[in-house]
Length: 456
Image 1: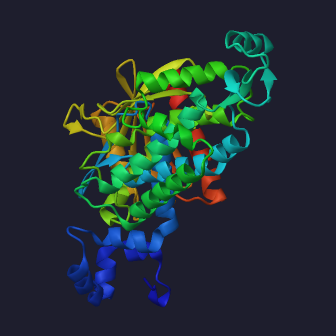
Image 2: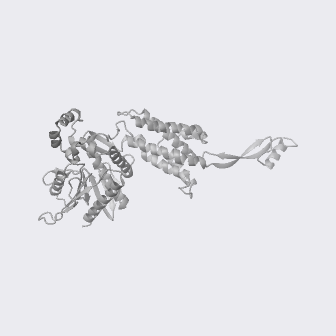
Image 3: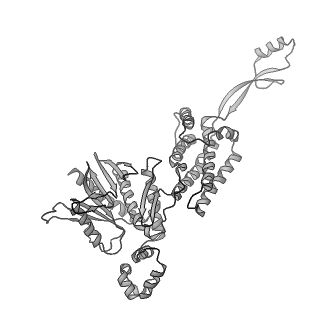
């Protein structure tokens, strides 16, 4: 969108202002808008968000969801204006699969090939020529028993190399699993067909697996490893191979031993749990303007959890339902809810996030992906605090537009709400160093407000 006559970005969000000054935009918008799309949603994406910002926010959501989703069978359902989506979504799962493929094929497997482990053992053989170590006592006894003066055959010990170790078997199982899973997903009857990007990822993985299986020194193990391909990675037979491998590798350094790296990689692959992908699993459409508000909410929530875990040493437990996150930090245990409904004294209320300690509401939080003046959001938060008998409210915005320089407001001179506090927190969804530093500062302030409130 080109801004004429040095128009301010903030003014272009105002529908009345724009359609009065540029009436042709009103008819164009009505002709091409998507569903119930609002003018401010269109302008917000075009003017205020770059594609890099949207991709950063999406990637961070997926990254943080994987960090906190301890149970591999659970996903996080998010409702938006145009549908309900499961996160991490399908594309995120496939990207994670590709990351594991890259780690295996560029780091782990090449190092295994260079440091291939094998067992050495001796085998008795009968040979007509002298070679290896001759077992003379057995050779002479056979010669006498056969009535010969000189031995015609010799009993020798031949040194053999055995590559069928548990760790080598797991190596080939990993390659076969990657190939099988990629082919499984390519052939799976998704209701929303695989995109071109998804098919490219899966084809690269399948082709890479074929290359290894044709050239590996462990190809003789393929028939043995194939017996494990159809079983789940959590099957006791796989776990037994892992246990035997750990026993054999005991005392070795993880940094230098590729087989120990392989065992850690298998654990990560098991957590990915690709077979949990359902026919209904789709991608979260970041290019849909109606989803920006929801995406901002989820991003803020998990950035907050990430800050508490990373900088406060918090232990965070996530549950699918009722969207509850138990947090333990600084000797305090509290709970963060996502979209929990509360019974207020006037009407029921459902803030974006809420924080409880010992079952009592302590902090109300809302994420507003707004560019226009923030007064309505602030009034809504004050209404939450009044209706729910709360004292602490935190609002998250993606920009400073129309926010007072004093971000923390305290009701010091009020007769009935002396302890009320409102924090207007700005967190920009951007990968720039300045935005990341500002985000860390903002969540540091949020954390201090939380812990000060919980110990009081």
